[in-house]
Length: 470
Image 1 (tube, rainbow, N blue to C red):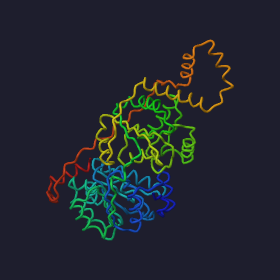
Image 2 (cartoon, rainbow, N blue to C red):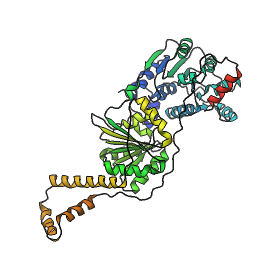
Image 3 (cartoon, rainbow, N blue to C red):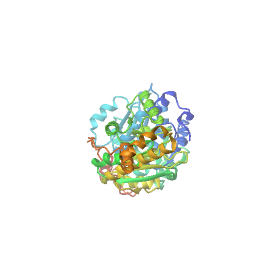
Image 4 (spheres, rainbow, N blue to C red):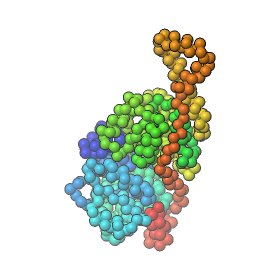
């Protein structure tokens, strides 16, 4: 694997990348970033979940001139959700450099966007309909843009945005860099590439590079309010040596770490709001084994080299297949096997299938464990501890006391008492977690035939604007 330090990035950018928890570049990042830094046009053929936002975002931020207040780069995305997601990641990448990033999309107050545009953003991330709207109002000027990114180009084609994309590209200088990312490469996208790109380099990332062979992967379908008891029962049954529990938000991580400690587990949380010193301190404790459970957001999943992790629990299903692969990749290292268990609420089953399709791996369904099974698991751990003590320790000093006890009590009762003392009985201390809403359901978008709507057709315009509000 190539590390980001090997890509020759500025120290300013490296600070932000390290803060995000990135160390190793994914295949598409390793291939795309050097080409982009040389101002080459690039076509990246990659699924969602291969790290493509950072693949175009890192060189994009690197090239922003902080002495120039004009819009210097524009990222065109098919949906409002993707525009927000991309802008958030670009903001993090550009945080040390103080790059100004603005998302613009339908459904948000346009006057508010106009005011934000007057604050001189360097990078615009937007949906096609709303970008066109601002161009027509002359509230967005693109004459100083040096980089254009078309993200999920095939989705934009499916939603009938090809004409809008061509119109936007017509307002950008001819001398520019164009980066196009698409999971598939249908003919209309090839035509866009031929018309608007200069000798583009094709970078392909196959889904098979995302599979993780050494990890047993399971899922448990469960209601949100039953997740925590199920997690603690799994911890009692499986007795992981080192485990990572992933939560979707910083609040979730803080609450989970506190709740686990309340029930007697040695756990600490890690997320983006922690100082670098605190983050390193938590990781050191985890590696040394003074805490058994690390509770983390996705930031901690990326590029961290933690050996000895036996179990990964996805308390919240990850946003995308990329995050899933990064998360579970913390176990099953150096030829060892690992176990990954993902909690899924009934409304998130579609997201589970999306992950399975992208990673080309089926997860095995697991039943939520019972309280009795958790107690049995802790008993097994106690018995193993007893047997290990018999094998490894010098017991001669204790034998006289044992003989005296056996004169007064039967052997079965004595051994049972030892097992009971060593068994960590499942704790049912009430725990209150803030409920996280399920991930939004990804709706299948109807494919539109290219060329069916002509520019200026009012029905086409309305459907596009509606799509941009999604």
